[in-house]
Each structure stands twice: as C-alpha cells, then as structure tokens.
Image (cartoon, rainbow, N blue to C red; front, side, top):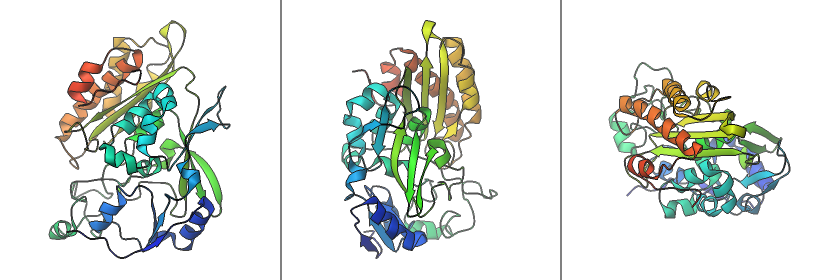
Length: 352
C-alpha cells in the first residue's frame, strides 16, 4: 500500500487567507483542491510538500458561474470559480449551450466520481505526465529516476536538455480555443493572463503561475456567434488521460464565412499548442471541406508527440490531422455522432 508522507494541513476560509499562508513558504507549500492529482502524486513521492492548503472551504472558489462584467464584447460572459467541480460544469446549461468545447472537455475527464471531486482550477494546473514519471517510487528508483524528479536524464529522449513530460489537461485546450483568461491572486495583488500564457513548454516548469499565486477564476467572453468542439483521443472511453486532444472554435458570420477561428492541440507537448497558422487559413472562407483539410494539415505539422504516453507516437501525429478535421466539421454543424463514438470513444452532443 502506498501511503501519504507527513504534511501539515491548513484549511483557510478566504482567498486572502490562503494567499497569506502560501506566501509564508511558497516553495514547500502546495494547493489542494479536489485532490485527484496531487494526492496520488504524493503517495508516489513525486510531490512532497511540507504543507497543503485546502481550498474546498473557500466559498468564493466554489460559487456557481455568474455574469462577468469584464467581458470585452457586447453583453456578459461568464466568470467561473476555479473551485467549481467538473461535474458542476457538466451540469451547467449555459456552458453546454454557449461553450460546447468546455462542456465536452469537462464531461470527458475520467469517471463521474472523479469529476465530482476534481475542480476546474485543478485540471488547468494538472501536473505533466510521462510513462517514466508516473510510477511508484521503487520503480522510478530502479531506473535511476528521471529529470522531472530527483534525476538528471529525460528517459523519453536522453539527449534532451528539458523534460518532455506531456500536458494532459482537458480543459486548457478547450478554454484556450474559447479565448479564456485566468485570474491569479497572491498576497501582493492579482493579475489576469490569457489562458495560453499560463503555460510554458517545459515538463517541469510547465506553469507560469508563480508559487505564491492561486488561480481563482476563469474569465470567458460571451459566445457571440462562436461555435466550438473538443475531441479527445484515449485508449478507453472513460478514465484515461488524453494522448491527443483538439479544441476548435470559430465565429461564423453571414453567408457562412469564418470571421475568427482558433485551433489548439493538447497532449502532444508539455503545454497546449496554439495552431495559429491553421486557424488563420479559415478566416474569410466558408468552412468547406477544402478549408478544413488545409487547416487540419497545417495543425498536424506542429504536433510532435514523443514516446511519453500511450499509443505509437507516429500514429498520434497522424491522428491529429483527423481529429482537427472532425472537430471543425462539428463546428460547421455536421452530424459527427458516429465518428465521435468510433474514434473518440464517447457520444457527446452539446445540443441534445
């Protein structure tokens, strides 16, 4: 049986109190939300904080989504507390109707019991994963550990100077495609950053969030004509982390012409990848088969999966092109229930 190491448990009631605790010793203190990632990691001695700051008792973080006065477009968007569970997002009719990619991403995380505990903020800050890292202590010690924890070599690519552990968050690609921002709060103040700017392509230092900061909110503009979709590749239709994910969003105007578009790939690098060139070729054109094929081809070019998770890496790269195509056809309004069930292993219809 794997047991948790000893740690000090703090349970603040406000964000300010949590930020003050975190500021005392940020390098030896970690945040505990749903606990579905950090507690298993602690049992495997991947993370061994001296103090855990539990966020569950902070009502501000658990609040249901509400109108956001900061929205940059006409009307109001949504401000989502980082402590909302994934199940709460799954049940939210506004998210299902207006932010389909986020709803689909949340609904495909793990299993219902885990979604009942796991939080939006926790999923966004999810530790990067790797076949050589996500093992118990004894297994990792037997191969002389890895660069991400206690070693000096990345066993995925021994010549690499950086860790190649992969980003496995579902919600981040979806929210990035939706143009989301996040609010980070510390004892010294708060700041808003674009969702994609929360990440860097480094398996160890994968977040730009400072150790003394708490991710408190996700800020979304109004849907305002945007359509979106999220597709996830995994071996099993439940429980598994993504080994490839695609989030696509487009704002379609008169005559079916794409006015703006975003395509984001997940689980093929240590951060979500913005396929900006692929999205750009869609703008000013109808979302027809030729445009979709061109965008899918360009998006697949930036997908460079490594041998750090399930499935053969070359096949995962080929699957990126296909999944971008499926996601864009769903955005166009095609009936994709059959390919989603066949390839993504889950039937999801946000309009149902």
